[in-house]
Every structure is written in C-alpha cells, then in structure tokens.
Image (cartoon, rainbow, N blue to C red; front, side, top):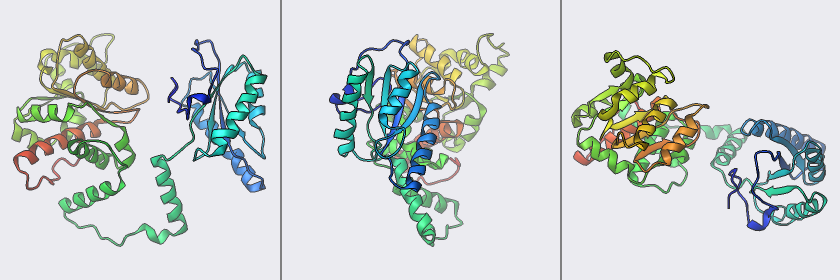
Length: 378
C-alpha cells in the first residue's frame, strides 16, 4: 500500500487516523533506528540519524520538520521526538523505520508505541512507512564492504582487448551481470543496456520507462525512414548517422531549424520551446527526441495534447531539478509511445543512446548476424 507521499505502508492496520489533509496541516518526519548500548554504536546512531534527517529534508517541502529517534537505549526516543514535533505545531507524523527487515520491531513494537502515542495525542495523525528492505543500492554497499575487507578481489585479472568492438562486448557482458531483475522485453532491455552503458550507472536501469508500444512504434518509424527531430545539437550529433542514413532517417535539430527560418523567440518561451512549436506539422510521424530542455518537451506535449501533432514516438529525457521530473511525468501520463527516465536524471547522451539502440535493433532485423559496431560511441 502507498500513501499519497509515496511512503510504503506494510499493512492498512499501520495507518493511524489517516484522513484527507489540507495544505494547512503541518507534517513532521521521524526516522527511527534501533539504538545501541555501546558508546561507539550510540555515537554512530546519533550521527546516522543526524545525516539522514539532513539529507531527507532536501527532498521535502521546506515546512516539513525532520528528526531522528531511537527505539531503544538512546535519545531522543520516539516519544521524545513526537513531543518535540508536537510542540512545533506538527499534527501529522510520518515515522520511517531505519530497519532492513520487517521483524517484530516493525510489525509489533513500533505499532504498539504508536497506539500509545495516539492516546496521548488524539488530534494527531500517525503514518508508519515501510522498512528499508532490499534496495539495489544496498547491493553496491555490500560489495563495497567486501572490497574494503579484501581489496585484492577488486581486479579479476582480465586485460581488456584493444579492439573497440571487443571492449564494447566486454562492457555489455558486465552490464548483463550488474543489472537488477527487470520485467521488460528483449527490445526494451537492449535500449536499457545501451543507456546504462552510456551513463556508466547500473542504477539507471530501474528508472527507464517505456510505453507498451514504444519499441515497435520506434522500429516502424525507423524502417519507414521517418525524420528524427532533436531539441539541441548535442543530441543530434550523438545519433549514429551511418545507421540513420541506411534507413533514410534525416536528423534535424530544432534550434537549427528555427535559426534557418529566422524566427523570433516568443517572449514567454525558451528558444527550444519556440523551436519545437515552429516545427509544427513536420513532427507528425517523426521520432521526437528531447534530451536537454524540459520546456521543449512541455511545448511538444502541449501540441500532442491539443492533437496538433502526432509523433510516431517521443524520447523524453531532459535532466535537472527544475521542471524535468514533472514534465517527464506528464509525458508518461499521455497515451503516446515514449521512452523516458523517471526522476531528475537524463540528458542528451542518454536520449541519443536510446535512439542508437533502437536503430541497432532495426539493423539487427535486416542483418541478424552482428550489430556490435561502435560508430555511435553511445
């Protein structure tokens, strides 16, 4: 079960006094750890809670209070943390267990404490988030601890081949080992692997999102030689031109097209947004690729929503902390073939990598023997 804020709830019985909240309700978050009897452990608990509280605060609205608490042995206790937040006017409390597994502390002890707190604070509302569980980042942390203990295990003794093709094959083989389980098609997996290879970050794999029709829509457009429009030149120059030419897919940068048309930027728009609006009907049936500009993607989606244009598919991976996440969510809410990346990650290289992966898939259909070339560098 999930709350509106995205916190995982183990069971409905662990949602206390949950109601619909207005914006006026002040929220507090308590990160609760077990605690430690030893001096060294107690110091680490305090430091971990301090750093967690500080780090989490950056992801939340400015008026949300965040603090730590210990279940046993250390201070502040859960009761003390709740009292402190209540004195600051907090009436809704989200309690986040800093525990790996849903043992008795999660299923019995903390819920019992919350029941007691509910009696003390009957006008307050308590929500218990899920335990940490198995996250892919924990795999990295365990591997790091192993190598700290036995650094000689870091090298497997393999010497990379000087052949570019062989290096790419070795990279892809390593990515196969590093990827978490993904419930996606073979075509989607090929795109994900190419994007992970480009980013050098295996955690990107779980963030890539596909519309169910995205891969086939893209392959159909490539086979038909449909044009590819990008928001910025960085995306355009990173697309494999040999493959694009083989399929007859012309590559255009929207900003270059605007410059050629001598169009004046609209006052309330960015240059890339104006450029995409200028493309207009040329976007119909195309592959629209936005790797840099959230406003360009927003302009495109407005035209799609108004049925002014219907691209064959959209690759939308703008990066950043302002508008990028939100506009990608809007893309993923439309019934149009897309490939995107959840959250703030993205960028021009990843957008181009997705295009190149799709063209390699189309090439494999024509020449199924080998498509391991490295011309794209992505």
